[in-house]
Image (cartoon, rainbow, N blue to C red; front, side, top):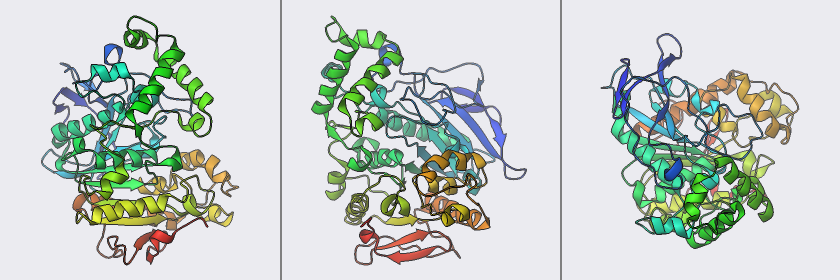
Length: 470
């Protein structure tokens, strides 16, 4: 790619990664809207200010304010967090490569687009432009309150996290051609709560036309992960409790007082409320998506069942150990929920593809480890030879049977990784994940109930709707 690169807000410089002849050009920490600070806290995203000098985009931005993490964060924390990474193998702006836009997981409360798992160059080397999006989280991204709703021309509040994601998709529409990407061939991707985020965008009328396909891995907007949409009025009541906990509810202008506080104080009050709520809330937080009648007119399940979703082809599935073993809490409702979404797609004549991932490295498999939550992302992003990835996963793997720090990666794992990347990028390219000479993966139909079993070897199986921990 030509340096520096021109986007609508100014020129940016990047860096080159990957092997000689298979270079990927990485542009990191690009602001896509204005920082949500000061008076812009708890408001819809606003346009980013242009810059006159070449902006250095060789390192990711900061992570959004968030609850403490079990694992060390890869970047610093700041409320100035609305940025994205672009990794492209395009040689020039005329290449028009398919685009995959990634929404990170973390239960609406933690993680960032700087997560090393998402930022390898292996997936782009398969001929796609990859965009990783950072967004507001927790109380900073989902707070609803009657005073915030009164400020809004739509009489709504909350869902700023979703509005950030829509703004990022609009940025992609306006700018991705400069990176050799095709704005008319955008695929959404999400894992864990990122998958739930993608499902909300699939269900929202305000995201219509901003993407053409979607991939949802191991996550749904329902009770199994403590993530489920709630009426906006219910979320506004939580907002009242937060402002009371902050001690600003009796101020002449409670919102101005809350906006003047350091974000650290807001997170302290948020954590205190979550602890008081107990249960899953002290793990995942109290904030959820608001059914506001605007961005989120109803629950995604109801929208799909009514055939009112954005009608795009999609891939959806999870890891077998999440469902049938101690692989982490997707619970029995997951598969029925997926099937309902598949049926909602079929009634509007949209193809969807079901999968179950079950590849486990040799040593961990022998020790009894199952295909746990997040394991498939290591394969899908081409990270199987990155020791860091297995080290990060070891805590969860050890709860699921693994005893060795070394998982025992072999050529079989590299093969499955290549196959998964090939199918995912083929789907981004065409809307059909079938790669010639690999395997025939049929679209989901209730009558055949078929899915792709991703392990070695790949296999098409029947009985997706019957997968159960019982």
